[in-house]
Image (cartoon, rainbow, N blue to C red):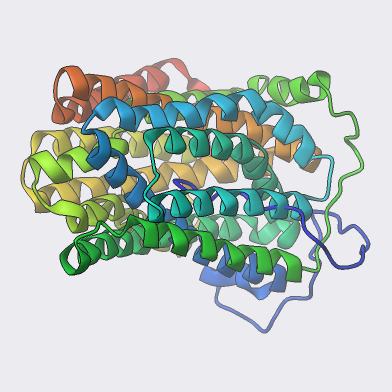
Length: 440
């Protein structure tokens, strides 16, 4: 599916002693360069490589879903509705997802989520290959995915600090972001090539094959979680209630830097969400077909991968608040450039710029939040963040599809980029906590 973001319960090895999240469950491997310090730890390596393979499948599927919906309907609103069906259950369940992530063995919960997501991809494969696919199937699977993601994302975010010591956490976060971005380069490009090749060879669009690959790819992360030695089941939270969920909200909104970065997250991603419109650009504006669509979807991640690799080798950036603001502003400028051009290569360059700019702010935001959050609140902090981080773009995709429907797709990208710039300027002027934030 669009985001391969969860993992689920299955038969697990015999219970092991709970490992305190700030300790390392495995002795470090032989010395590895500082750029890859987190790879010294066995369970983190297993998690990273399993997630990476699974993410490639999901990113392939992202091309197939957008392409298939637009070929079935030629209606921009249908592209936006998929995002809406994802975000509603995500918001409804996200606070409780964080509480559950702080209550149970996070590895088992991730295993359960992953199995459910594998079944949604298998459903798309079966209905497509048998010729009974209808638009409603996309809406139903998107709703299931949104609900599962509400539990999976805070669980995964809370698990990573248990796999590496605190000193290597920034590196682990950066490597995890890099894995997602590399997968987002390989997956869409490969998915578009498969769809295009199948069309030429067999007269079919080949999306069913892409869904099969996606379903199988989930087995990689399932295997990695089953092989882990680390067990995490924090004892501090046993009250799965609205009161426990609200503790996370109070924590986030009680800290100005977290409140400011999350609000910036939401509005920037709301206005700068035009990726669901890429099938329209590929088909009607740039005229590059399914293969071109794959590279359009991969371009942001190409810029992000290059940027993330640069960041992992840099010394600590002390003025992180200012860097976040500049990164978000550059993100808005890149979207304006993309909307103004009808040249394919310039469009690819502008999209790569969106990924590069977003990565600068994203790595720093995640590091600030993880280091500022007590372990017993990590799941709930992430669930609150997820409402902003995923709710913004999903609602923004709907907003962009409405503008594309009643104006044009390029105008949706241009106005979105301008909206990002306005929001960034307002946060820079009004929030001293973000603007002046430093790491010493």
